[in-house]
Length: 575
Image 1 (cartoon, rainbow, N blue to C red):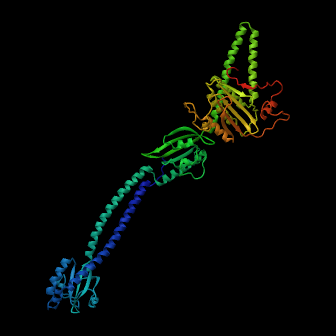
Image 2 (cartoon, helix red, strand yellow; image 1 turned 90 degrees about the vertical axis):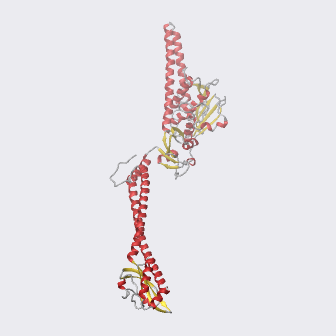
Image 3 (spheres, rainbow, N blue to C red; image 1 turned 90 degrees about the horizontal axis):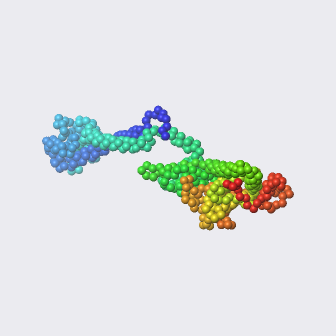
C-alpha cells in the first residue's frame, strides 16, 4: 500500500546517503588537519634532531679543532662545512669563534660577520635547539660548543629552514589528502550501494512516509475485526491483533512464543504449523468455529506465515437451522406428494362408483395422520425440535432408515430457558441424528431412536442407532474435527460431532458415547436447566418419566388427547 506523498526534500535513503557522505568528509578533513598539525610538529622535532646530530658531528671532528688552531680557519672549514651541508641535507652549517664571528656560511659574503641567534647556553657548555629567523629566514637550528682540552674554542650551528620543513609536510599532507579522497570515494560508493538497497526495501519512501505508514498500520491492525496472526520462520508469533487474541482465546504477551505453546486445539495448531497454504479451512476452538486462511511469506527463503481468522460460529448455527428448515420443507413436499396419491385414489374410487369405500379410505388416512401428529406433539411439543424431527424423519425415510421417538421423551414448549437457544439445540440434535442415520443406513432393521426429556439434572438428549457402533478406543477421537469412518466428501466430514461437543461445552453440559442396547452407538447429551417442579396434584413421573411430561399433560386438555404409545414413528413417506 503506497500512502499519499507530502512535499519532502528527499527520500529516507537519500537523506542517509547525504548524511553519511558529509560524515565521511568531516572525518577525513578532521583527520587531515590533525595529521598536518601532528606531522608539522613531528617534522620540526625531527629537523631539530637532525640539525643537532650534524652540529655535534662537526664539533667532535678532529679536523675542525685542528683547523681552528690555524691562523685562517675559514680556508679549511668553509669547504668542509659545504660538503657536510650537501651530504646531510641541512640548509646551513655555520662554524664560529666563541664571540659568534662566523668562519663559515652558505653565503660567503656573510663570513666574518656576527652570528644571528643565541649562543649564551652553548658558551656554558650546553647544546640546544631553537627556531630563529636568521639571514636565511626562519629555521630550526641546533647550537653546540667545540671543546679542545677542556675549553670552548668555537661554536657550531646547523639548521634546516622552516620553509623546507613545510614543504616536506605539504608533500605528506598532499599524499594523505589523495588517500583520503580515495577513501571518501570508496565510502561514497559503498554508501550509495547500501542506500540503493535500502531504497528498494523502503520503496523510495522517506522517514515521514514510513512513520505515517506505521501509524496507519497500527490503526488498521486494531480496527479490523477479523483475526490477524503473523508467524516468523520459526513459527513464533511475530504479531497478533486484538481480533486474533479474542478469536484464539489467548491473553497476555504471546509475541515471541511458539504456536505450539499457545494451548490451541491440535488440529488448529497443525494447520498453523503447516508450510502449505490453507484456504477457508474450518477449525474449532472451545467456543468458536473459525475459518482459517494461511499464506506463507517467501522471498527466496521461508520468512514466515500470515494467518487470517474469521469467526463463522453464527454462520454455522444459521446453516444448521437452514438445514433443518430444508429438511422440514422436504418432508412437507414428500407428504404433499403422498397426499396427492391418496387423493387420486379417493377420486378414482368415487369415479368407480364406490363412494363408501372412498369415504372409509379418506377417513382412515385422516385419522392416521392426526394420530401421528398428536403423538409427535405429545412426545416433543417444543416447536423447533418438533420441526427438526419431522424434517430428519423424512430424510431418514428416503434413505431407508426409520426414525422413532422413544416413550421416555417428553419436552414441553416453553420449558427451555432463554440461555439455551433453539439454534444450539438444532446444532446438537440435528448433527447427532445425521451421524446416527449415516451409521444406521444399510444395516438390518435400520433405525434411529431419539429421546428428548428432562430429569433431576436437566435436559437429556439421547440418539441411538443400529449401526456398527464406536470402538472404545475411539470414544474421544470421534468428537475431534476431521474424524470420520466415511470417505471425505466435497465439503469434508468430521465436523458435525465436533460442533456438537462445542455447543454442549458452551452451555456447561456433557457429551458421551456408549454402546446402544441393541447394538450400534448411543450418544447422550446432558445440559443443566433451571429446576422445573411438578404441577400441583401431578402423580409423579409415571407415564412421561419427567417434569416436562407433567407440564405437557396439564397443557393438553381432556380425554381427547391420544394415549402415548411405547414408540412413536415419525411421519415420513407414509404419513
